[in-house]
Amino acid sequence: MDPILLAFNDDSFKQLVREKLPYLYQIAEIECSRDGKIGMEVGSTREKILIALLIEYFGKSRVLTSIPITEPETDVIVDDILISIKTITGKGGVKVSWTVDAPSAMDFVKSYSPHCGILFTRINWDMKRSNEPSGLFWIPLETQKNNLEKLGVERYLKLPKPGTNPRGIELSRIGLETLLLDRDTARIRVTWSRSDVDYDPYARWV
Image (cartoon, rainbow, N blue to C red):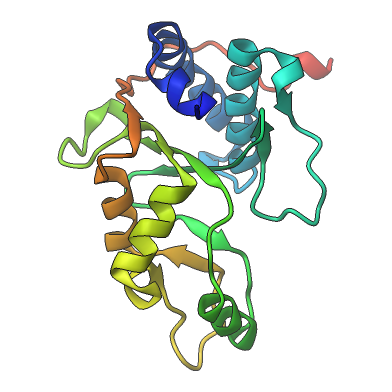
């Protein structure tokens, strides 16, 4: 059986996520902020945090982090399950490809087929958008394929506009929400509350 799905049904993993994820993501934002603005590198830091939680739960022997560059979607492998890690805050877009020129983007869309399960976090600090599902989600590969087939690629992905240079290809809003609300998507609800953190991102270097 899918080890990630088993973890999502395990109370000890749920507790691990609920207790650690908000605090660690807050630290990540402090680490990656400059002049009050969060930098793009926060994505890599959040990815490392989730991988660290997987290692803590499953053990290092079951979590493969040395992924060849020929696997652009895969961020980590647990047992034999390929996982892509995605995180957004609020209504941010979810990139499925960083292709930036229009012809390559259209070629990607035409041939698109997901290859990994998605470990997805939607952050909702202080629960300001209560109408949107937030927390940590596991979207199995088969669930993605089923919804892609049901919606069609034109509705599942946000297509690049003609005459523009796209900044990557994203899931459409309806594509993402359909995935999150699918009955086969697992979810751990997280209370996104900020803590009073006294953290100096430079202290560890001196």
